[in-house]
Length: 290
Ligand SMILES: [Zn+2]
Image (cartoon, rainbow, N blue to C red; front, side):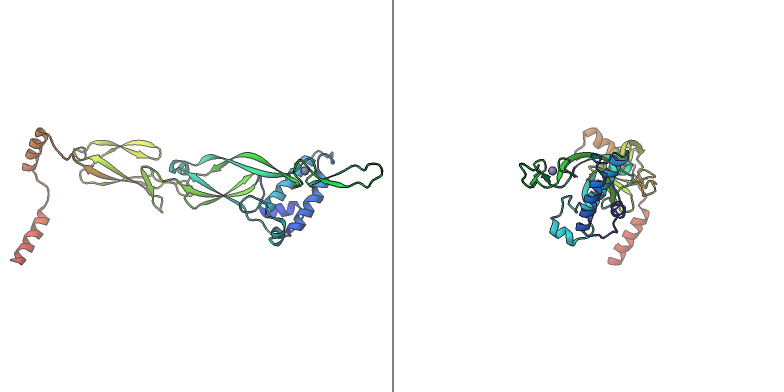
């Protein structure tokens, strides 16, 4: 669990905007006070973890790596770590759990995060310090973690979600993967362009149409190329789903069998498409030309 940045400073007993040097000093002092190896209090371990979490929240830079100390001293507050997260339309619509992997940096246990070890004094020589070999003198060790984030239903491309990982606050930038069947409008309308058999369309047959929740049956209507499936679109922030608009493209075979030709001949002869208005306009235009 990670903290918002103001809480992180408060945990270290600092005001937001404290310098990196102040943060480091406060953290060292608190580690010395609360390290469970030194402090037998029952809450010491939990307190120590909170201190480290707060320190990491402040310390981690935008790309998750520690800033070099001199530059960091000039920069009072750390920005949250950012990561892109790509979702399928189905995942984004329904919400999902996504695994995250990352690394966090922890104080080195061998040297208590100091980066150096005190050598024992020999034969009356003054004691001295040596770099800690466990962390190569850095005072910190990288450790991998796995974390699961919950993406709420209705996430859109460009949305930024706050996640709290073992390595600190993480800002997830949502991307939506292109879908093989659907496109998504700004207003949440889901669109699908679907070829259908032209004869099936004329015969007003039932066809299968895709929706985000699976295939559905839909009846074709000769008078319609566009069909609105209410409540089958993408959810808004409140979870209310928009519509799915299916636009059909009737397709006809390029060559017909002799039987199909003769059937079409009969259909065409009996044709009674309502073209009166068009015919009237056509004749009027022709008369004016003459
Ligand atoms: Zn060490």
